[in-house]
Length: 367
Image (cartoon, rainbow, N blue to C red; front, side, top):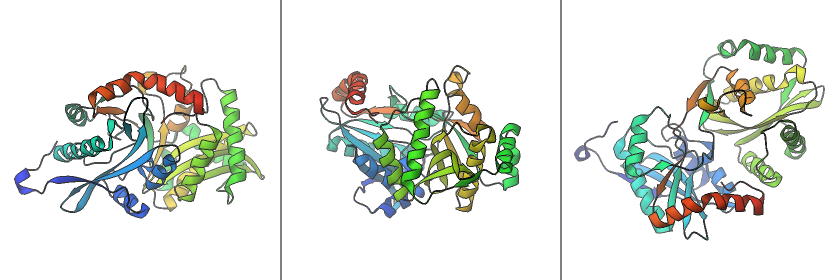
């Protein structure tokens, strides 16, 4: 891990920029190392504000240039006094630069303390094999969080190669499914009107949850509808349907940001399943993304290697996603940093009960 001599370089500083324009924040985030994540975008922060999470946006700078960024969502955790600050799928920093990492979290801790926060929670998209980064974060004071809030393991498809090469990298059965759906006349469309397509899509989600053991819809209908509409209005959410002879068969909702897009929700009808509409749906969205300069497809959640067996309810999801030729990546996962030790400890003990009560009262996942 590199650390430039302090005497020959300007120091890193942290600045709060919560009042910046959406384009300004998203530009800084896109230009940060790694290109950022949609759950760090301005639109996502404003959506979460509706549900009680206040966005706090911070940039790491050196010599007037932005070197990294992190959007923290603050939530009042009463009856435990103070706030939790959650950096969902972030921050985005030059992780190989120890000085930068230490400076960022030192600055964030100062801002958090002044804001009354007792705990920082982060989800850096740093590969789990990055032992130097993990050791550095532990030195700073981070420890493994009680819960993994987003999947720690994903499949990422590099969309840079030509289409023929992308198809060749797929598993034979996946490639066959793509071509069969095309032969059967399945088409993929992005509906012009959201509401009708959303109703169909959500109906499929409910049906999937009823049919498959281990699958649940953990968010209320209104939350999902608000989320998809908000991100769609921001130009960062897209709902695609696979259609055969004007009959919708399957759908996928994706997020886009910078050079990446993410598989967020998928669902399908029980009709004409033998046509393999989901295979063509994924392939056509990949082609759509390539045409817009998107280079990476993050297929999001799959089970960790130790859970990857046929007893896991998501094993079928893993088999489907891995068929598209992507690479499996394990991230460091969710980490906590206590800012005010007594209150942070109280929150850590109270957290499970708080989650249960929140879900009971609001029918929604806390984070």
